[in-house]
Image 1 (cartoon, rainbow, N blue to C red):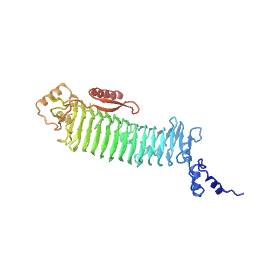
Image 2: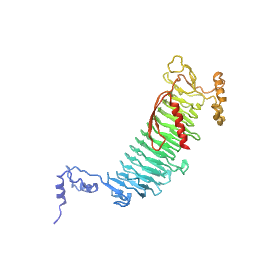
Image 3: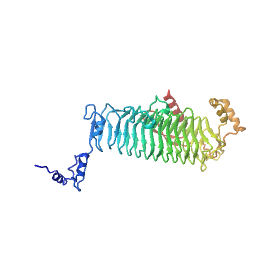
Image 4: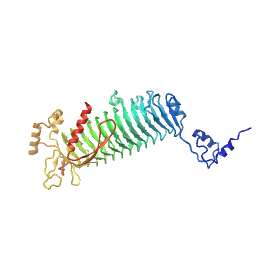
Amino acid sequence: MKSKPLEVFKELSFIPNALVFLRPKQVFPMILLGLVGPGLTLEVKAGTLIVGPSGPFVSVQEALIHATTGDTIRVKSGIYKGNLILDKQIVLEGIDGPVIQGDGQGSVITVNANGCTIRGLIIEHSGSRLVDEDSGILLKSNGNRIEENELRDVLFGIYFFGSSDNIVRGNVIRGRDFLELGERGSGIHIWNATNNTIVGNTIKQARDGMYLQNAYKSTLRGNRVFDLRYGLHYMFSDDNKFEENLFYNNTAGAAIMYSRRIEFRRNVFIHNRGFSSFGLLFQDGDDCLAEDNLIVDNAVGIFMEALRNSTFRRNLIAANDTAIQVFTSAAENIFQRNNFVDNLSPIQVIGKNTTTHWSHEGVGNYWSDYNGYDLDADGIGDVPFKIQNIFQHLEGNYPRLRIYLFSPASQALALAEKTFPVIEGSRELDFYPLMKPVVLSVQVPELSEGPRFKRYSLGLPFAMLVVSIALIIKGKKR
């Protein structure tokens, strides 16, 4: 007796949920054969595949072969060797920290399908070729979530290769500290992409913590980046925001190069020291905004070359060797309501002067070494503050003299210079200096593993907080 499959499936077409237990690879041939009626709504349940030493799958590669779109692969604790390629939209989830150990060539996990999730894995042992983007995770698709993974012994941590609309959250990335800085990759590297969100990651010992090139409209928030070259590095990347990040013990906290309309708020740039070190560096940018940031204990607090039409307000710039290093090419920038406290040098101007404005709409900045007066009690000094370092020429020729800047002899010379000016210093003036520091509401992160933040209001006692932060950082380095 011959079977009648057509009649069977015609009967099924009257039961809307009859195919609910069929997997996509079973349903697809039926559609091609016309076996599914036009009125039938297909509902396909995603499956869960378990990988573990005792099965049912003993390797992640085997589970990937059997998985279909929408499935979840859960990997139990253990070490699983070999690189992985995600060509289907799946969730790859670790249970109790399984290790995905690459074969030492290429990227450990390459994501080609959109909408994948990678969570809870330890990922290690990528290849070593910078030109091939050898990474812990190489993203070549869009709309993925990379969460709560640990990446170690990898060249690049997470590489976005033209990959947009991703969320990368709560990962710990450690680069190869046994390599020279120039031989390492970045912790997070974004190239030619838009609308990525990078939140709550810890990155250390890479080349750059977060590197963005031709990357637009991304948000970087609550990341903790230390022990590398540049904590954050923008190249030709416009319209980005970074907020509440901690950058410390790097060559530079952040380097903003050839980029426009960058907004950064409530970040901490602290103890970034070394040869040519900066808390915050600007090179050829426009229309940037800096609000409520802490820039503390750096070789140079803010470096500006060819930065134009940018605004700095309500920032704390304290305990730096030089607060501001500015080139003549920095034009029409505005500094207003910032607190400049106990910097060895308030400013170094490269060139004769700059068109940067040190006050705006009748309000300037607070300077801890301002000795003026306020007879009308309006909170604004009656005498303009001349922003200069009278030892600038000596420092440039004899850098070791910096250690004597606060000696009694140097202070006596500074007082004499103010009384009888004979040295032509900086021409920069704050015409409306503030008599009291500006109260700031700043998220100050704890210096422990993971970015946890406490809120402080910085008013009159904020100088004590600055000293405390500096001592904490130095204590951590011992």
